[in-house]
Length: 481
Image 1 (cartoon, rainbow, N blue to C red):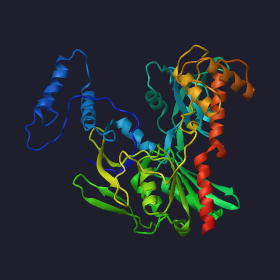
Image 2: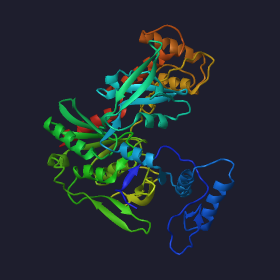
Image 3: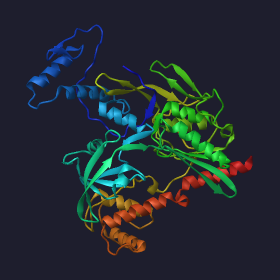
Image 4: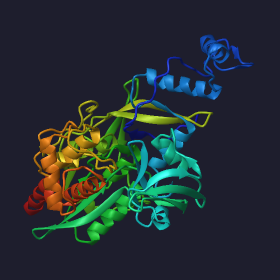
């Protein structure tokens, strides 16, 4: 089996549990043939395989049985971060951390059984082909989507660079179906974004890291060089909602902020042996030495996990940065991915990681230095809704709208999804103030306007209490120097 680099990443989806196990090639056990061949070194596994294949009333492909056994082995560990990935799942997982993806460049969501385009990426093949928000995907390459999951739809749209995918979409605004062809291409995945915030005569460098992927170190290098060239005197690093990524990536980024050979974390194996992880200089990433002297604030929340926590814990323990926001997620294990002969991968927790002070944050998280409670609107997933609701209805889409209305300071008595009188009044007031329609119905126009208002609220810096506190803190820190 081929071992990959250490990977820290939060798994957000649970896998189905299978009740029998499969082991391959354990010395000392007599091998038993199954269907003319040997599956494993454990007789009971081959017996179960044969029973299912020969006597089961439901036909099952033998490869699916093996896949089920592999999932079962991972599930029985009881560790949400140890999991089996099929060949397709492994490819998608690697792609999620790669510097680019091959596709059409559009966000797709599932809404009441329909697959809707949320938005095409600017300059993407999807935008060039004419895909628009609220377009409903009806057919892909001439085949309907009946019974397909969101993952199935995404897989059908993906393909090799330069190939074409044909799509039949229904456009509500025109009330008709449209045939489109989109040529798949490389879609850059940017994980680091930056800007200079000018506040009371100071220039503060703001850097957001959404994930620690393959190209994040280079992006961090480009971003910090740009900030220093622009006159930044300090740094605010934002890892809110960052689920993790590669350990070597976060190590390289931390290394740009501290001295060479500084221990930024420890690895602990199953035997309890500790291995210090130290920063090092790299000719490939010639970071500006000014970074090591800049005041640093790190913004985190409960969605900051894994590799994000390695970074925040290092900055905190080394007294290199001040943590503002909320306590982080609390994932203190490290996974290795091992390639299997069927093209899949076994992702297994093989180590704990400890902070520079040898603390294990698993289940507890990295505690912030200064807690700042954020408007709930910042933690709500802003999505697209296409259905229509009115007073007396009950649905999770209504609960979603009630939460957004509450976050936007509209008075709603409940947020459980029941469309009551207070919700009616809030919808009427919202639509009237937005000057888009009259009435109290939650329809496509209402949800589109609500989505736009919520996104504008979150993008307005004056509403981001955690960022405002970080700016105030670092402003005073620079003045103290």
